Image 1 (cartoon, one colour):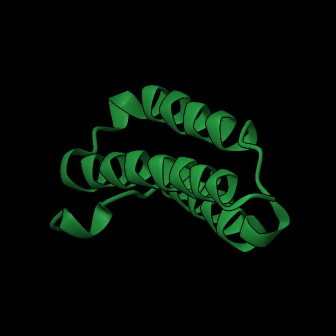
Image 2: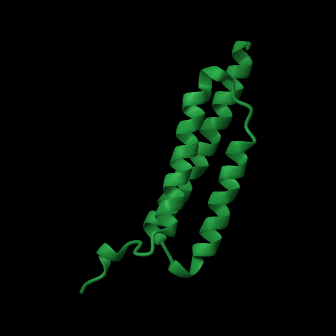
Length: 89
């Protein structure tokens, strides 16, 4: 694959990573259990965007790392005791 296409694919992966990082920071700083469904819709949209990427074989490890990170953030959202450590007994 020509270098410019590889660079474009890497750029698109990094774009999704950037959006995911901002979203994860928002959740860490302002988690609101009442917004769980909206959080899940957002992570699903990021996952769909990642799935739609055309990635050359040379970038598959970066691509699968992105997908794994998306799954990790989804699991954080779905965890029933999210941010309980901040609550006093």
